[in-house]
Length: 351
Image 1 (cartoon, rainbow, N blue to C red):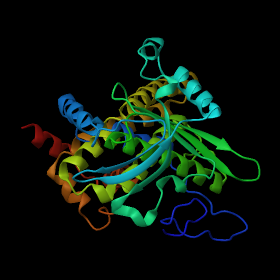
Image 2 (tube, helix red, strand yellow):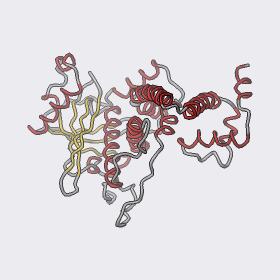
Image 3 (cartoon, rainbow, N blue to C red):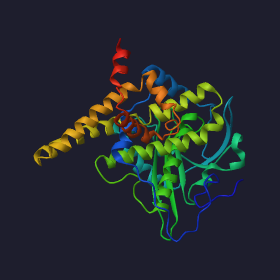
Image 4 (cartoon, rainbow, N blue to C red):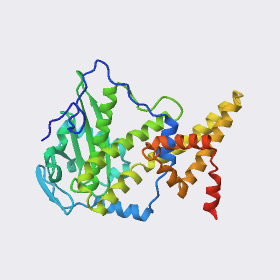
């Protein structure tokens, strides 16, 4: 097993022993949302998404869960083993709080969430990355993973625990069979939230988004994308199968983030209206006009991305390595400096 660093992750760089932490990079909230939320990826049909989720939810092997147990799962593309045990009274109290805060009375009345169905995950090792050892060891020493092996529903949540003296940990709750790919991906996603939380603490900041308009929603989206990126990184060794990779991408990118993106996009639009109204009341017509101009330009750019000219521009040496959040500002500057008539490309596209 690889040696663990401060956060228990052998892939992270060693701690640099500076008296003060490095100044964290903070994203501009509006630019971040424009790129991560409003510029949507190519959509997949609801039917294709539903089929992906059904494949991921299906257990790779049927397990008759006892109070205590061990399971070795050997699938075509995914092999792993895990141990489990019944939760103690303190853990049951946490499970009960989670159930009542997340699920409706109607869902609870169905019985599949009963405390007797829950288990504590004690140990999880993947054959493909056996050198990394027990996956759970990468969490805080007092962290716990509790799951309810059911096919009735699927959900995951992390509860952070801060300990005095600098320690940290978390409780992760998963509704779903641990023998299914979906539950494993959910576990990795919640672990991603843990590492993101630890990084915020290390940098001594509460957010990686600069304070300003849309910063709250932008930080929410950033956290979810960061957690999904972590999950995808851990799943990468198992994604040689094209179908499993496609299903994983659909789950992490086009399902798990969907509600966050929709709410953020709605709030983005609402805040834009409020901002314009505030500018009018203050008599700041210049601000209002600039906002309208930039919003219109953003809409044009979104359409221009589907043209061949965009592909040629993006392939240029100075543009091909741009980070996602840097693309629109770079294009906006290029249009202003070259006076490029991009609208002719849009007109040609419509013909």
